[in-house]
Length: 402
Length: 206
Image (cartoon, rainbow over all chains, first blue to last red; front, side, top):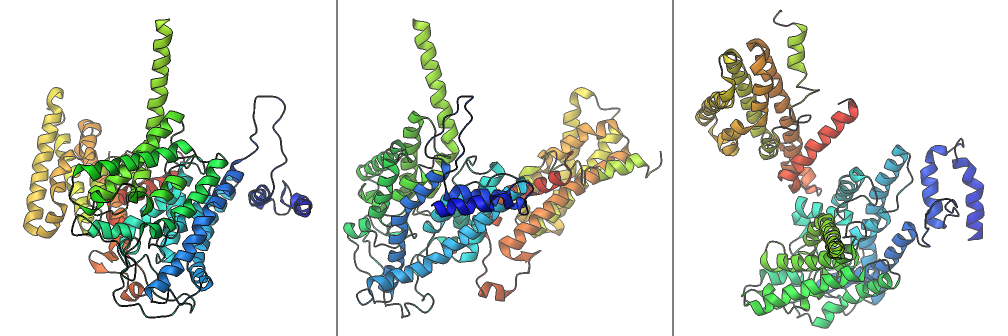
């Protein structure tokens, strides 16, 4: 640490006002505060409170919390591929992980290069500090797309989301809707053939010469939710790529086709524990998403609708698709969720309700989490307003009574 | 006052760039969203609106001193409705395919805010010649935005222009995909937003 500090102090004058590279001051400042906690304290006058943890530390913590899901996602990409070519038993752990690593890494690189490129350009252009918001967006975005999503459309979606969902609203902390989800929604509506259906969730070709092989007979790349949405009768038989039935345990552990980071409930739970222990994500939002989703699914269970999605046991809605990932990492986004404590319950509850409603009632969208969170992002300020207003009128009534 | 005096020129040019009805006054947005998925209907729509605005401006301007002010909206509506009906029938007779594509939006020109706005704001108080220029200017300003939006949407959304394939087949084989979002109305709104952004950052006094 000491060496880094010394080196940064040594090169600092070059980037300061009047220095040779002063035009790149914001870039320098961004890297300095990214590596080390800034040494500045607020002036003794005034009433500022400095939290021990600033927004860069929050972002890093979320990225660390995402790591289990990302690493498992890489392994699962490899596992699903070897399952599709019929070599799941032969291939070892590391060859599966290495395959997934090589398949996922380009996506992470593309989102970071495009997104940070735009952020840095805008910061330089406006003469502001570089915002740290893209740190999390850039890692979440590759985790919520299918593995066969081409890189160039990912780059377009990243650029679109960063410019139109964030920068025009004023940058990090000012966006109304979740940036990563806007990128995903853009992909979903602009390139539906690469974002939904049965052919994008499992990579069947080799990556850099790794994992060559013929796809087995009877291969099906449909996700569990896709199979439920297209099931002809009231109970869906959920199978994996090779046609074997998927047990509940497999689904919880995450050995199912799906977006890269969303499959494993266990890995997401590890991240959730970290976020809750450090107090970064709100347990109120998280809990109420599950309560809302579970309750709605339970009502459909006993409601007597004859479709596979409505008859899926309420707890199984949590383990398929992006429900857990959305509840833990997307719904709790402190910028776009409701800010009032009471509002968080309402916000989370309605996300859960909407997600299950879309899953069950709209066969065109097997997965409703993305649209549910985006919808409630837009409604979050309204929820906050109502909560604040009801509080005001409650206090007024109390005061008048006295 | 000559036919091409400075004022007449200004009346014609201002709505094209500076005071564009779509990007400055944000009028006529619904039709700009609805008919711009393809270039052809957008062109026809732009021409129809230009003709109707120009002619109704002239007619109202000729009658402006005899219209009782209490019923002027009704009179204006009757004139516009008559012209819209004529244009709609002409389209049905000579360009049936396009008129099917435009569907109700030809009839809905009558509710286009640009029309009533120009009649109220300009034709009621100016000479027929100036009113004609004003109508043409506003119509062209509207058509221009429609064509720009439709050009971007058809090129990126369907890979064609006026129905001719522009994006070569080898691009599709290399993995290029048409952007389906471009064919949806929200994208037209975003493109118009971008045009407004460019216009205002080029001309900060707007």
